[in-house]
Length: 175
Length: 178
Image (cartoon, rainbow over the protein chains, first blue to last red):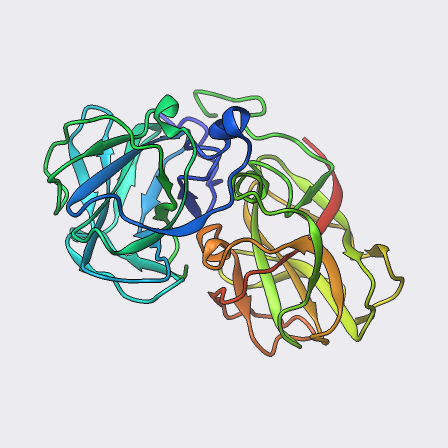
């Protein structure tokens, strides 16, 4: 069987603001919100954001947008719709203020087939800052999990805290 | 033949620019609440590469950039593949015409479905263009790349992470063939 709609056509990066995730969806509720640096809501918390990809996608890197203060460690990855961790960076020292930080999946590149997934980001620090927007994101499937650093093998979705960090995945080496 | 011969999963457009959603980075500009405004080109001789995709064959015929108040130096625009190989560029062209669109008549070039980069370079760091200034870091997250000392646009681009927070408003105009 040929890959449905493969075509080799896909964007180099997919993140929480992409059309494949929830970024646009929050605008009709509260209007567009300018991203700002803000502290992670609680140490060891994980945030899960739905992403739906209509093409095969080879994940070479995960990335996140650091804010004005870096602290602690970060873990960024991807889960199946059912809550199984498929890949993540593993615990990674947060480094570099106001830049995009990226890291490869700890087990190497992973090929995602067209499906629904959750992008996941967790921080060991409640003072580490990330670039984020503060929409009413709960409506769009964004969920939290306490005590989830490093990212667990399976997730348990909790309620949203109304924040949307900007993070994602890339199939290119340079971000 | 594909099992899903597919009609138009990807939108078909006659013009694709940085503000185009889905095919380029427009939805992320919107989601980031980056207002369109006059922006100063970030560094002389820098090239900025903005990713875009086409889902069907596309013939690029012109590149367009929206100049604002300060006209300075020369500009160049074109299209590159994922590996940094030049597909077509205009070549160094005097920036001309404040507060209006400047059209660059590139050689008609048909590209197959795939991912590409729209390239724009300027020899001046004082020239101003319509564009967006998203929060620092967001250009990289959108997949925007850059190359220093890249004027006029080179035969082969060496892509580097984007360090500026400026996306000029430029676009490629063509017509779809299939």
